[in-house]
Length: 356
Image (cartoon, rainbow, N blue to C red; front, side, top):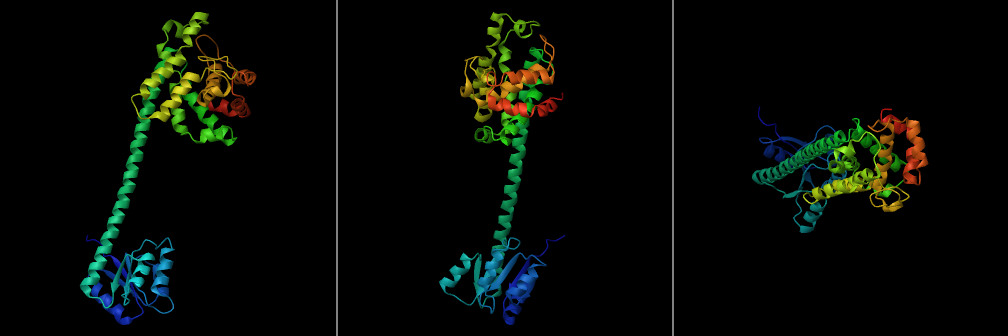
């Protein structure tokens, strides 16, 4: 099947000019002719031409008036317009081009000149559309590639995190649950205007994904400590506390070999500071209040909630209500009071998010 013919509309109040234009174009293009701007707009309600040849000097509505309306109407603003004019002065030509015309053809015109001008403008328009399609396709390809890389990163991180979980003998689901809690917590904080400026500047997906590395430092802890069924001795607990610094060190080494800084910075701060406490009694550095990065303050509360409500080798799971009582008691001592207040306000949402 051959390529469909392009449609040209000629607008001129002179019947002779319309007839000459039709005869010049009909072998190559489909042609509609109209004698005024008003009739053009009526026609454009039914068809969308590939190009408009527009006379300037017409009664009632000049070509300049017509093109102003065309370019202000979204549906037809992209149709290329070539002016037909008997005016050969520079000012008239510049005015038409300023209004959005792509070319000028001076009357009387020859068939060859008319066809060549139209051919050139249609070629330019075709190339513009192809470039637009290419840009859209490229944007789609980049988006798909980015999604693939994101999914690959997430898969690798989840595998590493699950290895840490298994070494710690944690009942499965800790990583997934803390991610769910974090996403919910960020959403609720933003809704309540808490830490809005800082949180709104983050990519929430990246932040939540980075949380999978918050306990990566446990890789460096000896099995007999990490998997001990009973309480740790004071010496063993000091050894266990080193996992926060070890985790941050591991992530910094990754940072040194990649350009992806935002994601890893979230992970580093979370790994290093999620055991710090608001009153300065946490570890590894005894930071207090706003000295503790927001990433660590957020992870602290969801990590404790999940630890309390799930079984570990050394303890039974506590109920949601018991966990909430402990968190409420830690408001302003263990936990950032602003974050804890929002957590407690919506505690039933967190219960549902954990599948309790």
